[in-house]
Image (cartoon, rainbow, N blue to C red):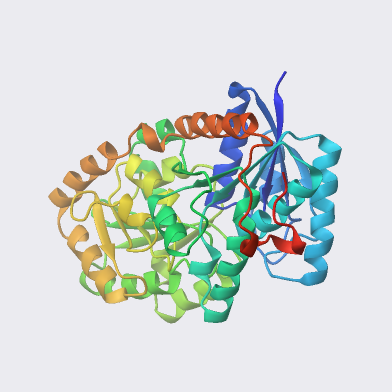
Length: 407
């Protein structure tokens, strides 16, 4: 009989962490775990395209909506969401509660503790205390994470950079942490090939330099920087074309910027797509201009499709991009540096072909979603085997609501 797992995810939109979660749920069945998803309700301001819940249902995954779960901190809504999550855990009789993201991680770990879940696992896709622009908020999030961290039997981090940040932030070393990279459908991207008809549909001619970015259209993904760099690139390489794949609340603003820069006729907004492997394979270069990334899952996808990547030197991205070999790293927000590297690729077909081969070869089994699922299953088994044996919390690091442990 399969053991039951409840995954709790903050974001209602389809994102890298959400796709990671759904892949985990889907593939864990083969390892003896039956999973369901609990997430926030659909956000009407999140942009077009299917919600995470819709995507999960299409995959046959049971979904529990947490009505009061929001990204922003709210004492009233958070208290209500906590009760809703506790009820969902008890109602479903889940043996493992697996939380994702900062807000769901905080409330989910606490709820699992209150509900008496045998195993609590948390995945860190990115630290809120590194992403917030406010120093006060960063201090608050670090304080919260130090006290929430001991609630989990096991903690998974999607990059070595996140593990380094955990140590630097002073998170309890006794916690059982493990780096498991966010896996992709590697075969789908490795097998994707260029098609003249599809490139033409994306606006590319025979001599075009086709540039693209796959990401949500929201804060922190660097679309303004990308458009400024593309504007500079087109002055030297006017045949260049930009493709943006993804949707989100900033779409109207980004479209307005493209028009202001005179790029509307060379910038294609595709919105949410289900054929990302095929689309990615048509690109001559891919970017990820984020201000912060826990790992940068789309970087791995692009490389698997044989596409050189130019990405921000942030978070876990430097673990993926080998400077000058499968791509380039640039400072976040630096349109000049980005445009310079794009110009190098646009003007040198031999360089693109060499980097394409290096990119595809650099995506090994450790980035496969099957490998990820097998490693997560082993984490679940270890957490379940150690039920009731959790190390006691240090008294001065008491958990929220006055609790020091939840054994």
